[in-house]
Image 1 (cartoon, helix red, strand yellow):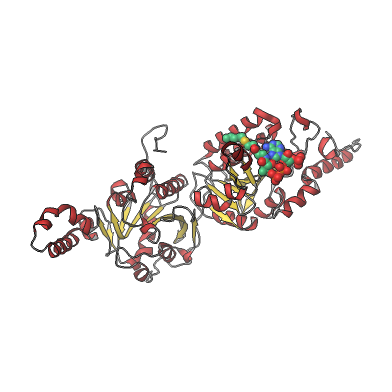
Image 2 (cartoon, helix red, strand yellow):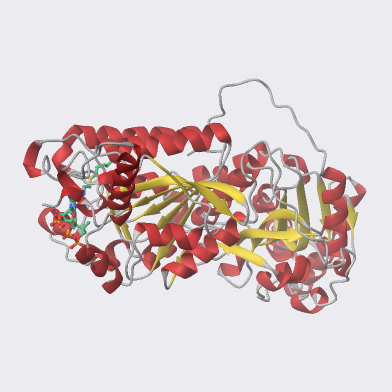
Length: 529
Ligand code: HXC
């Protein structure tokens, strides 16, 4: 065991100020060296960086200031009493990304597998407290084996302290988790409480109980990647982004932060307005087919509307029938929520509702205006959906929109039927501005289904039921299935030329820039979780 791990001093004589300073340099170097060479080589062999390399690549050069690098654990049992490495397996501190302050912690897998004991947890608690009180985003670079087994309840309590802080900081500062190794138990639960989770393929996994325990308890055999790898969690909705390597993950994290304010009392950073706000969006007339049943990719609509076509889509591989993400319009950061007609015809179902609801709540926490692009045939009918609580889950989406106080703009593009029309940020649940395209159809249901219900007897009694049915369908379409019915009644603020969508949204965002809403005093609402 080297002095690096077990001494209280460097072992150097320390007789005068210069000796003491030299001793300090040695001690600090030991803390910086951290990993033994073998552990470092193992990280690299696995395609992983060390904790310090990660921090170096994430932050602007030379900006990292470390906290508590000399902290060590005080456990004595199970042979770890004589192994007390500096840092205790987590590097904490602050630095800058694109000149904006962030707090960061990074597990060091080379020290007890990055597992969390009392001292390790206390360091994370401190950096979390500082991030919250100074209103600065918190980034966790996770590569740790969960609770440190040798420290028993102290390790578990350490996680409890992290979870409580995650929740307390929720909606106050953005919290972002990057998963860079096997993250077991508590190392998975804390990220689940944060706003964004980025995972790297092959090396990162998240699970509550690992493959060995699963095999012992249920007999199921599975490896780490299959159990909780990046692609698994992209599909489960647990991961916001998945990446092929760590550099890609850290690059996306930096880009993501460029859309976010530092805290809930600030506005998101505005971008340059070098894409003309009145640029006509001619392609929209071709992208969205006239027939309500024909699919298209709503991402093309988004890219046509937003600045430079730059759209950061979140949770792409989960609930593809709804698209969510961040972009700018005339420099304003916006959160986009859009039905996706090319997946399940863009219906709302349990997972789409969950996905959009959490995103809306995130945007509302951090003063990000919401732009909702509607083309929705309704909620997905089916026994499975009903039995798995589409009512409760759909209500999450409804709740999220109803409580959002950020600027809200709805664009009714093509169809908007039934409850799904209401839920997708309609005027009646509080959108600030509702625009419709001339081809929009808002109705309780599609014309054919509606005619079958209200004219069933007439059609049955008709001499020529087919012709009668067709005439009645056309009458229903003429009367109700256009945006002018809603516009005449104030449920649509304006029917716009689709090519003007970008400029209409931008004008709305400018108008709503100073929007302020006071809600009734309460501890918190009771969202249907
Ligand atoms: C202390 C641990 C540790 C742990 C690993 N190590 N897990 N030390 N506590 N939880 C140590 C190992 O002894 C080893 O030390 C070093 O870390 C590297 O571990 P390896 O097993 O050699 O690495 P690898 O093969 O890559 O496997 C990594 C691993 C595996 C998949 C993470 O170590 C593992 O499954 N560990 C147990 C994970 C776990 O069950 N954690 C508790 C979760 S419960 P040496 O000295 O040999 O280098 C939890 C409670 C909170 O977190 C839940 C709240 C809801």
